[in-house]
Image (tube, rainbow, N blue to C red):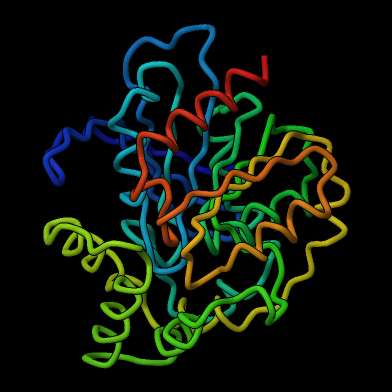
Length: 294
């Protein structure tokens, strides 16, 4: 069983939004301390859904800022966490902590069990599609209610990646000033329209926290998820921006083709961050997905 240590309630302003959560430290089976944020710090309603958000490559739990400070927070128990090597979580320097799909799967399982999440819906963005599918491959879908794949990776076939993949490769191998340049270039590729300066600064700051050991190992590990996707019995919602230059729409169509119970929602004039670029629509669709689960 994972070790859990609860910290104080955190209350701060981020990009003009009030962010308030209970900070929890979870130690994974392989000894990595993971930073978890429980945004349902008030009395829990019986009709709430548990929702676990997982961020992408070189990102952090702050990626979900709009969701955890918006209307969904009033209706459901929202939990975010920083993956190993990211954000406020531990950053082991050995590559072997990042290469094994079993370690990623066990990390997700540790968060679910330690926070006592009841059949949560997993919402995963970009690289986190792989992390969620690592978990589903190892543990099956019996302990979750649904899966939301937000521009989420489900295959490594070259045909589903966009032109910004070259920048991702630079991020995996560069250090120092070269990494800063690559991270800023990727942010420019992520959205259809330019973000406000404070939002760009926030995203760049947590991009720079990921060490090269994590970035390199994560980008080079292999995976095959087709059998897992075909074996899912839970509802799946795929969300994708039509102007995504990292994972093209073909990525979500691949997911859709293999899942038995899946739906695709396309966002026009939107890049790789539909939950940020069109937060209101995304939150409404996620809310409807949660409600439809009964």
